[in-house]
Image 1 (tube, rainbow, N blue to C red):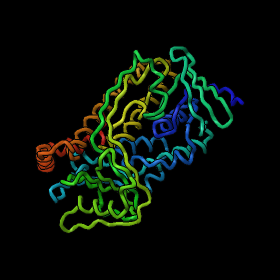
Image 2 (cartoon, one colour):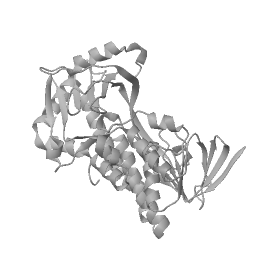
Image 3 (cartoon, rainbow, N blue to C red):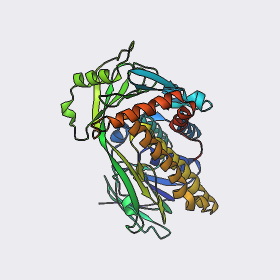
Image 4 (cartoon, rainbow, N blue to C red):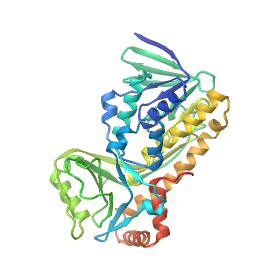
Length: 396
């Protein structure tokens, strides 16, 4: 059986945040595009990922007209707490950055908003359609071959945007002689839970503890999102709900503060890694989001980098296809990578400052971390550096 052939201007592989944001941007610019996604709509809309978005990402969603629910339900935060040595220290990000803030609004909700907007307007979005090959990148009409419920599908376009994540085929379509990658595996992972428990704090708590890192976050006024540093080889079956709550309480403990517990509705273990691939453009193929870069979640940069890529890419594609100006397209990889490497540095800094290194048997590293945390919490200049990076730099 054959599903046939589709001709469009831009073929987008992947219906995650990068692909959906790019598709929405191109729709508003009047540029035909087709999105193919290997998973079902239900799976895509249920994936638990990031939950904190920078000011720039909030602004982008507003520009694209998909911020109505975000404005109603998102939780705006002007600061975070760094907790160590049993004490909490607030970093007032809004005061340190001229009023810039972050918003707690889950990636799942952003994806649902974008999917709903695209389907309501009749934009082509093919779920359960797995891209199997990307061909003819050096020609004028590259091809995405895919396999869906109705059989084989061929999408011919002027440009292909691979927004298909770390494990997708997009990055692998670059010739080996061209593609370069670097990365780092961290000696710890995050055990994360969703719980029907009202948050025990108004803002996120990043906690450095002799027992390991902990993060107290939230998804809504009724739902908590919490994390524990664990060994990368740890098995989720070893962590009962009672053990998780006990460990969270021990790590987050400080005088006069109580951790609110509740039924755990989801738990998983996420490996920690950093990864960058370049160039992010080769011929008629462009990479965006996790297809090109991964950051550890400590700095909350993954989703926001995907949004920044989508914004840059939409502007570059519009200039190329509507005005025959390839200047932005030619500069896309270099421009995007400047922000990617800034985010890599910040994420690495936050991660190594807060997590215990299992190889630090003598405690030298932990003492350095405590000294660094104390400096960040006592120096306005150091606190501003954290705040500026956390809320998202306007220009990189």
